[in-house]
Amino acid sequence: MGHPVTTNPFIIMLINMTVVFIVLISLSFLIRAIHYFDPTAPKEESKPEVAPAPAPEPVAAPEPAPVIEEGISSETVAVIMAALASCGYGASSVHGIRIANHNSTPWEQSTRFQPHDF
Amino acid sequence: MELLNAFAVSLQSVWLDSGFSAFTWGNGVMIAVGLLLLYMAFVKEFEPLLLGPIAFGCILANFPRTGFFDEMGLMLAIHYGIQNEIFPPLIFLGIGAMTDFGPLLARPSTLLLGAAAQIGVFVALVGAMLVGFDVKEAAAIGIIGGADGPTSIYLSIKLAPHLLGAIAVAAYTYMSLVPLIQPPIMKMLTSQKEREIVMTELRPVTKFERVVFPIVATIFISLLLPPIAALLGCLMLGNLLRESGVTDRLSDTAQNSLCNMVTIFLATGTGMTMSAESFLVPETLLIICLGLVAFMGGTAGGVLFGKLMCRATDWKVNPLIGSAGVSAVPMAARVSQLVGMKSKPGNYLLMHAMGPNVAGVIGTAVAAGTMLAMLK
Image 1 (cartoon, rainbow over the protein chains, first blue to last red):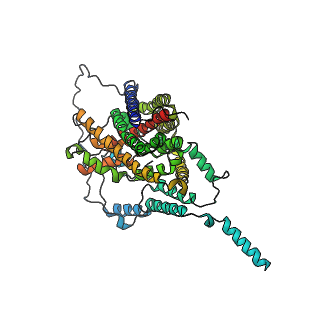
Image 2: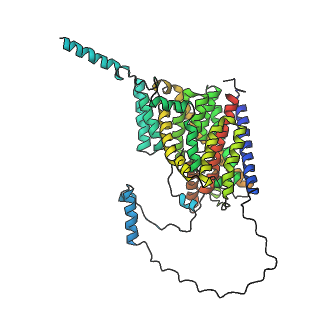
Image 3: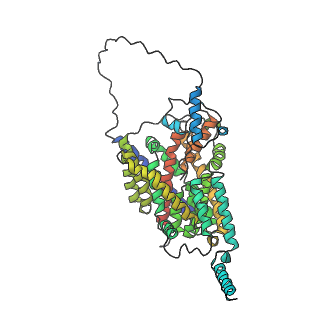
């Protein structure tokens, strides 16, 4: 090992923070460049010049909305409880069961998980 | 009479060869420390996957006359893997395979938050030098603020191997305490109005971007900072395996079996550096205190830079995501999400916080590389 360039903590801090910022700013420019040159990116659609308006087709009558009973069926609750019990949770661990928002994104769904750090 | 004599000599020999005859009070204290860490890991569930093996390694390290490091065997092989920086890059391979870089690619400006949060590393470095550590030891202690276990171990081995046990324990203990350490700082530094900011949805990221980024980033960072090429290279390789779409088996191995195996080896080996003679020194207490300062400094730095970005973008960035700039993937991002949800139910910050969180991993590695280049 050689000798350190400097042993002044404030100079080390200044130099290192500058390098960290420069490297990460450079990375952000690289990311933008990759996005800019992405040949697979969907092109922005140019507006059609004079697109003749198609004749309105007869709109099919919407399917009747499925009738959903309020609350959760007892069969569903039984299945959820069986699944929880098989994971080792006792009944005292369950505070409630609610229907998740089916339209939520995978990221929103993932907020319910409990992973561990590295 | 001869039989009794032989019996007595044998008993004496067994006693003299046993660990009991060489057992010191220091060994007793360290075994108690190991038991405390086991309690924290398994009862309190503070990072059990990491603290558990570390604690058990600590207990094993304090049995006298085991001869673990005298001749080649499992323990020496594990020690070899740590001493020669084999395990941290392998852990990074798994992290890369588990991590979605999408939020970072969708909003590259969050890289700045990952950079700002590194201030904790250097605040701790300054603090460590002020209390008497030399510059290499101070750099190894400071990196605790990066909240990144493998990088902390990697830098400690290179700059201050005698402090490895204390640094690793401090790093992993504080990482497990992220949900307790960060929220008060985040709340103290932000207003209710700032915490309630709803960020706009991220743009979709194409597969091309996901595949090209790890390759380009590896080339750029490895050329710039060769000392961390192994760490960053493995992180990006793991991510490439995940995103390529044609190496599912390798990606699965990297994020599950390989990562789990290496975690056992790395954590047990780290615990085995906690022998009484190297751990029961006043410096250990200082390192633990400085680690806390580093964590708090990093969190504050990220949140304050988040406030700056909030103003610069006309209140479009929620400053809470800045705290995720300390690595601790993915717990720090989850803390941003939880604090945000408490301020405004239904405000999902997790995907936005993952950008700075991933940037923090890269930023900590870059900080480690810069310090290695300057100090080694």
